[in-house]
Length: 352
Image: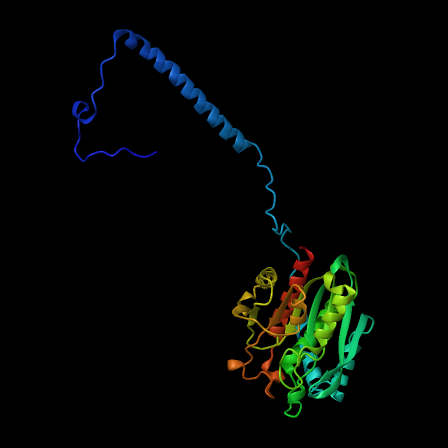
């Protein structure tokens, strides 16, 4: 209600209000009766209104429909996943011990055999082919381990195991860049094997030829995933992929995962929510960047994809692609943060 404006000085009825003409005698007789009738009507409406309010308060509220596109999945109250970070760290040590491992090298073959030796009894497939590069022909081998689920669809997790051909003579062992991704996928395999998942199938792919042979470009990089994405587009596999997550450079002791802007917002948010549930969100998304990595061939084909990567390795990224990328720069705690968060994100994807 809008209040009446009054002056600061008190006024009398005679001077402060307009004059009202006197009522004739017959109206004076009817006026009390009219007031009584009007009052009764007003009271009746007020009671009706109050009764409606009381009824609304007593009756249970109807369930509201979920907004279009809203995730009505109830929150997960199960235990937060836990990887074995010490075992994962040991995998990195053993991979680094092989030395540099560019495509076509003996050490590269040794790492392939090391990975497959940890997957005995699992459903493993190879995507092997030969690629023609600016430095000649090289054998490329993507290693795929499949863990079936009860739901129709695939969650894909990628991580490369090769090191740069151009850095083969400087002692670049790629503890973080290639070592950490290879190791965390081996630990995911430990967590996934043994029983059919109550959710989507999970495929782990140790990708090959991620690094450039000479200098990074659209044609000199991502040899393994470019081939795999094209192959899966032709045979219909791409349509089954619900989400793709790349693991890369995730062992940095000073961990800070980028918010990777090639990812759809819903997938970035889901990973962050998984980190929040583990209380480790402070290690995520202080920076944003569009990163070219193994997910790009799939992004270009419409697959929801995210790169889980810390691309600030040492002050101003000083350790990246140098001989200083060694095991002493890494931390089991960082592997634990990324590993647990990723497994929780998989469980959240199962429930969408």
